[in-house]
Image (tube, rainbow, N blue to C red; front, side, top):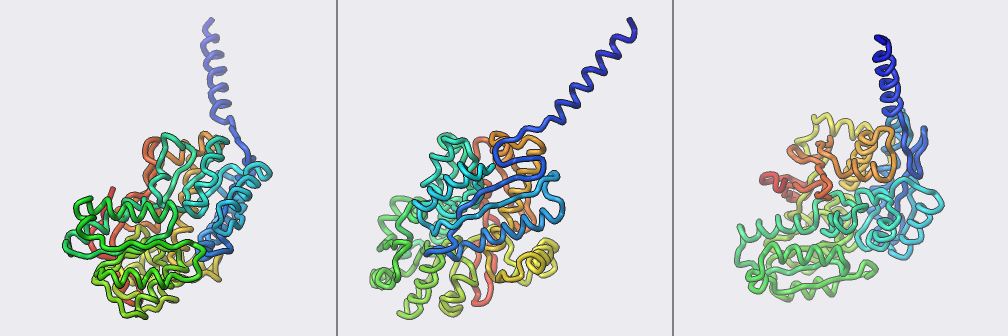
Length: 400
């Protein structure tokens, strides 16, 4: 009969619409909410980093006020782990097993993140945009549920090593870093960038510190007495500020002073260290500094300033960590936009590994780009030098 094809077509059409409209939810998701979990050091030696989490809480409030993501509001439960791995384990288990969150978002730190990486991967809970750059956060083959965010520490130090070999191939280098997986990744990355022959010839001293050390004065004095004229330093904000101040106090003036990008905050590092002591330090970054005059008419910076005024008025406008937290929150929103109504753990992770977007506060030419075999979302950066007031970019964009 002539009408049979029409009926079949109608049935197929209805089935297609029903399939398209089907909603798939994992733990922590409903028609109205997406529940996220997070650990951050609101107390302890790395507490300066807690401003990242505070920024994200404020940003998601703004998103919720605007109607949420695909009609769902984002509920971020952010707990203090004091930068202590045992506490991270305790709080993460609470978030997964009691709160039943959809993801663990941007947990701060390599040692803390490592303490729960296997647990989260065994549970198949996304450990999304880990707040650390250790190279191991790109191990998609062995830990497919854990993905980092910023450039890897080895990629960053390769940039410094190349610059040093170009400018001072006969330098005497001192390395100072935290005694954990993150610090060792930085130190090894710098040496890898120099190459084995140059390491043997150029690196004259190394020193480490513990995150709980009350002072790092003895290590800095040791490095100075080595005769090094170039210093690379990785440290969390408290010890970074102490070290920069101590270097100034003892009159050590390295010809080149590289500072890891994790501690470039003007408010929590350079100001307490003393701007005069910090002048001339070289680092790298991938985000715009709202205090840099070149961005004063930039719409993305103006939007960030409006966000700060309305949703985070107590935030320090000189703190680059806020820009970082803001950008990670934007990347998270993008992941959930891409998920649509399929908010299972599997699809959230699939979308996190399928990104190609230039977020507003990223430097021109730098994007968030991932794939199932590339878990390093940001791989490009630019060198910057502190002029005593603000960071000034120089050179070309380096990396992909």
